[in-house]
Amino acid sequence: MSDTLAGSVTPARRGRQPWAVRLGLSPRFHAFCARVPGLRGLARAEGAALFDIVQGFVQSQALLALVELRVLHRLAEGPLPLAALAGPAGVPVERMGVLLRAGAGLGLLACRRGQWRLTVRGAAFLTVPGLEAMVRHHPVLYRDLADPVAFFRGETVPELAGFWPYVFGAGGAADPELAARYSALMADSQGLVAADTLSLVDFGSVRHLMDVGGGTGAFLAAAGAEYPGLRMTLFDLPAVVPGAAARFAAAGMSGRVEIVPGSFRDDALPQGADAVSLVRVLYDHSDATVAALLRAVHDALPEGGRVVVSEPMAGGERPDPATDVYFSVYTLAMQTGRTRSAAEIGAMLEAAGFAGVQIHKGFRPFVTSVVTAVRPVNDAAQKSV
Ligand SMILES: C[S@@+](CC[C@H](N)C(=O)[O-])C[C@H]1O[C@@H](n2cnc3c(N)ncnc32)[C@H](O)[C@@H]1O
Image (cartoon, rainbow, N blue to C red; front, side, top):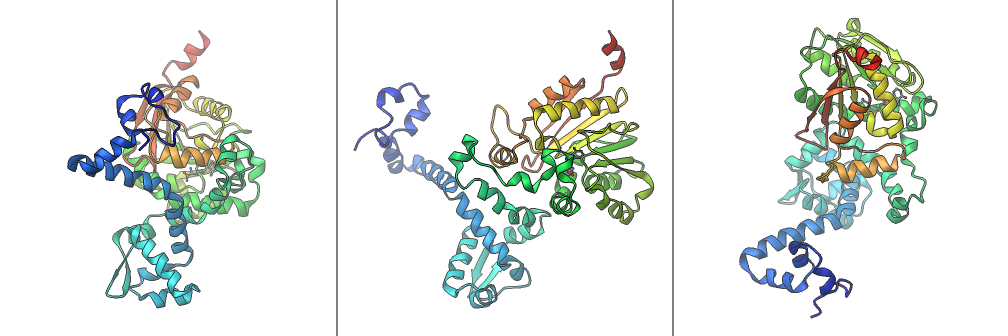
């Protein structure tokens, strides 16, 4: 057997690699691992991990089919035989059998004595807020990635930006129907983000919180419920904020929330809050827009006021398996944004005049992580020196 991979990596070139990579490049080493009991398990696990990467797209599409054909939803009502799932879905029995077994392979379904049922993972999929809506909007992203080489070369015009029209400025997001569609997707998934943000940051000393780019108010409603004395301001685009009033009214919070329509690209931010949150806002925008926004937030805060940035963050020096794959590619397809690491966000906060940057790594980085900073006391004096 030749000891090179596809004849492309010669032993001489391999010699420049770290020893573990040199072993990985050696088919002889792979054959050796397959024979040695302790190493065999390791080699299998590594092979399975590699195959998982290879089959990722097929996994996602099988999940999408299970969702679109409402298989998971129907099984949430109770176990069913194959034929009862195939008929109403308009899928031939044999093909539905393939899909159901794929669902079982993904750990979402199981079959016992001819009856298909949900597993705990399948049930969780239906229960996690926003997950189903996220899966259902993925065809847009996958179309954008259909030719990944052209996509990464920047030779394609991704559709995804059209789903998030504000990325090209407030004027792009003037259509209330479009705004309602993306706001619903964000509000659905805000439950987890809010829960993680509120457990990572103590807002106990905050008197008045302004949520910039706060959508229809899901984060503020969660913060207001946890801190009953908190005053709040919601700032978002005019096409978005009308959806917020009903939420605050239903939560009995109307009296302590002010809703301010506006664009942080064109309008000044309201004054008066001693903390500003930016939840899943920065990653949509270019460095120049983010730098200007952070400066505006700094200027809207009093000395000692705090900024709280919460969003999925890249791993930086140590790329993260979720955020450096899913979110970084997603924001690249949006064309204007970027998934930044906590350290990059911290550096941008310092460049905008903040100090005391603290990184609160999320326990579910694919949901969110948080970076906080404060506008320094005597800041105005410092600026004039
Ligand atoms: C990804 S969504 C996040 C919404 C909410 N913070 C959340 O996490 O669910 C980004 C939000 O930023 C708002 N936004 C985008 N550009 C804006 C601008 N120029 N001025 C004000 N809000 C803006 C959008 O309307 C949208 O509600």
